[in-house]
Length: 283
Image (cartoon, rainbow, N blue to C red):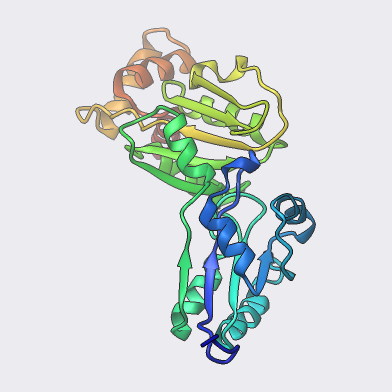
């Protein structure tokens, strides 16, 4: 017997879409999108060409960061009424630096059925393509742009023993690379641009090489930051300050003294600078 609308099992389904090449969508994703009662899109205009290309013509509804809270309730009401609600973002996995996470949390709170399909995600692609570390990684999304929050994020990265992945805007990528290169001159980085698209590019460099790095500042970027270089535990804070004082008293400039202590101790430039400033204030 054919199920009626009231008897049909409603479900929330998060569906990953290609991060560049349209052929990267899965057969299961296409099946789910064709069967959905409604498809929630981050930008309906952006998603329409993808759906049209696969002859998928289902009702579309906008679901983005500006209407996420109220639209989540509306979508989950539809699930409760027996509808199958598919959620997609502009590219990649919904909920990963894109709307979707709130929906899952609210679905759990309301005891509603949901699932997440496997598929394209810039994070996992970058983790492998970067070729850094041992395969473990931390994903930080978009870092705070400035202020105390950004410094806290960078301080966390100072000693992170695994690869870190973050997204960055093409308008800020150059500044971010220069900032990180100066902070961690000996660390290894990978810059992945336009992955899976025509102009796919992977650049590998150290912090020392950041200033001379040449790349096109357009498109989608993922920046991979290699594991922090282990600090020599014999270098206490006091030992760092004593070494700086000794080297400067022997004629080295503050900049040269800092560079030598960085190389010998494994401490970051910012960490040594802070210790030096604290020592000077206390004296």
